Length: 130
Image (cartoon, rainbow, N blue to C red):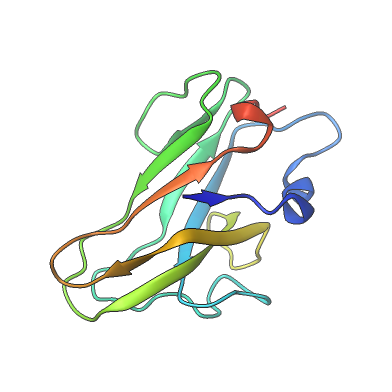
């Protein structure tokens, strides 16, 4: 399970609340400090995943947002080569590498070619994006 770092989450909240915003979630083998590419996993077939925040709640790309959601289960592509231990995640605007929030994955996720990582992300404010 992973949680937003409260010191970085404030960067996501604007003066009038959030509009529909698309974010990328990245997985890391060590703590990223400068950009989403720092310590980002390199397992074969890996791709960042998109989550969306709307006025009614958070969701994973391709699913309908639900109000009051307190966790997102984010499924990443199957590992087809390599083995790594994923210890951190980061969140940034889709199409960029600037980190808006980051946090530890506890317990860490060890992946190899027998499976795919699933990140359960606890949302801030009990799932209320406002």
